[in-house]
Length: 398
Image 1: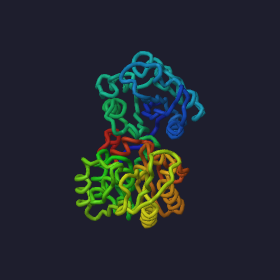
Image 2: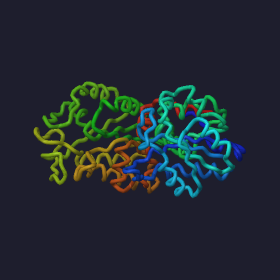
Image 3: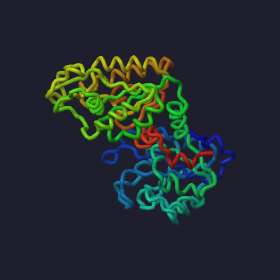
Image 4: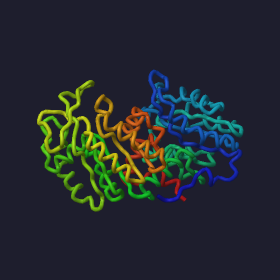
């Protein structure tokens, strides 16, 4: 990973107008925030800029308004929560460009904070329109990106507007995320292991192709493991989730793994129905029943995964190894999560996890705070794992 500028590279910022791209796209229901994690993680950057006397303009998207002004996607309900979390007065402006915004900026005093309206109310945001980018950048001295979760998008607020602002740096959350990812995959301590789960091989082809070049062990779980087992010639049965169009691709991945050891399940849980409260049964992969469902990996596989994790110094995790939302199909994911947390607590493992389902499964297992770093950035985390260059990171490079 290239070196990037951070808040540490800023000299005197008192009185400067600072535009901060945050990710305040929080989960909400009926106008109430159900999880404040994204707000809480943004607060350190906000407070540091305020304490240094900057005039801070905070911008974010929320939901998918598709370039139209829709009241249900307004950011006005975020202002009180951000005020509560940061302990500072937040002034909400019901636009993100134009005279109203410019007047508000001209009236700001050092340490003041403006929260702009949803960037995606304008089609120019997602189109990375030059005119919209210039409008966002008007009278801005410094650009701070604290939203790694949007860094894979070349939008006006993540890429375009930086062409018109001389100073561009990463906020503390972006810095923390990039440093964690660098330790996990770019400059890791070996041996390095990766766990990849989920349902489809087709959605993770680029990811798997990149990981086999970078890690020592690649452990595959979830329904996608069924496709790999089919590629190895195991009889999976008619109810098994096998992506038949991907079997040949899975064979190619297995054949081209090089020095990376790909670890597949050696036993699976089987049940009669995909429903809560099923009695779990287990079978080795060479003796799988023909008409059953396989919602989780088995205890032998779980122990093998844990043994490998205990040998390794670095772990990257994307995707649960079973249908963790339903008990008892969360058994293996929970056991592995607890083992990862224990190794991390003992200082024996750098553990980085990310992706929506992964974060949810770690929360459910009660260990989210015990890993080295858990990324809330879904698409950006996945594209980084795929080895792709992220536009929102590239603009921050030295």
